[in-house]
Amino acid sequence: MSNPFVFALTPGEPAGIGPDLCLLLAAQAQPHALVAIASRVLLAERAAQLQLAVKLVEVGPGHWPTQPAPAGSLYVWDCPLRAAVEPGRLDPANATYVLETLTRAGQGCLDGAFAGMITAPVHKGVINEAGIPFSGHTEFLAELTHTEQVVMMLATQGLRVALVTTHLPLKDVAAAITPERLARVSRILHADLRDKFGIAKPRILVCGLNPHAGEGGHLGREELEVIEPTLEQLRGEGLELIGPLPADTLFTPKHLEHCDAVLAMYHDQGLPVLKYKGFGAAVNVTLGLPIIRTSVDHGTALDLAGSGKVDTGSLQVALETAYQMAESRRQV
Image (cartoon, rainbow, N blue to C red):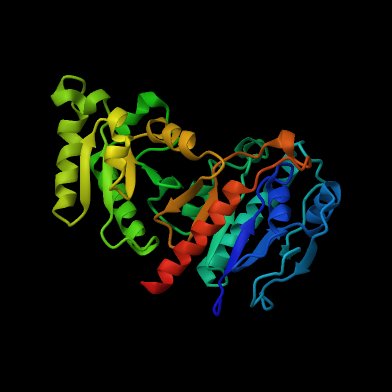
């Protein structure tokens, strides 16, 4: 490729499989330069444990790579650990290390050093145990980039699902689906499908909240009072929104064949379908940010760290998605 991008890669929780994934990924040449923002010591120790011959090439501000690394090599911007790491054993002492890697990656994207960032899984619990309020990558990056509203979208081959609400108890979902939130999320989804995925006129299917999409008000009035009026308003702005449709029949080939994304009202309405279809080959994308951020669709898998029994499939999809998004952005 004549003009490769540089991307940041954060390994996430050091005791989990993130470092393993980065090292395994280095066995294959990539079309763009990837910079792992991580402890060089950690990567060297994990490579030895996995019996992987990976050359760690030091880079950093002022000497970023200009070409992709050859197979068997990994660019590393060294970020020192706060405490020694034992695979599979969490240590709150390294919480600030994890957040520093994310801060460096996010700020590098804002400064133009990186075309995007790809994240391996973090462990929210151990960061909170360190006394640091942390609810996830999405919220952290929203604060770092001063973004008021972000949207979580997961994607796999043939299906994209975005969420109006994310990590809320089910009893709080209906109250959280306000006209304002639904409109903001829909606009962000539409704009990023267009600008970051290169879809000129995105076609979005919208789930109802209630069974049978409320069945004309007999099974709940949120569709009549909130969802339908908001969608009608947004259609007037040029958004192509179909629905609200009953979620139990929306996720069928007849409906999905001609859509670019599904907008689900809550976490467990849309994501079980997507993960059934593509677990291990799906990507988590944060929409609405001024930067590109993709992530794996799985957790830290502490029990597999250092075992060599991990699948890089989701990370590879996250990389490919970030590459495609950066290329679409360049063409806008």
